[in-house]
Length: 65
Image (cartoon, rainbow, N blue to C red; front, side, top):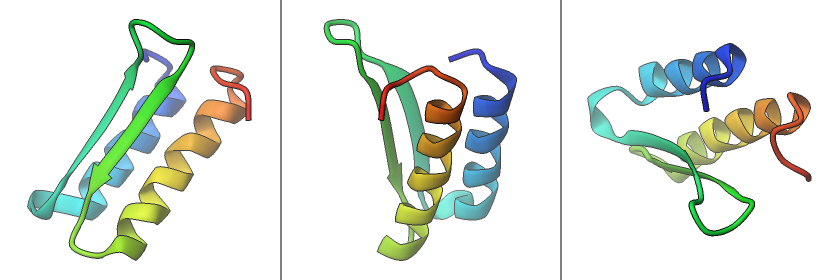
């Protein structure tokens, strides 16, 4: 995922989560999927970050909703 908008969304999520978690976005090697995973201090923060990244991926046409 080299799309600048996706990279910006990932960077923003990483900044929000800080050292208390991590963000992983990767294309599946076996299926037409983009995996978006995150760990954060709270489930709410994790969900917000994932949803924001997925929204950008879908809007940019990299995945079907």
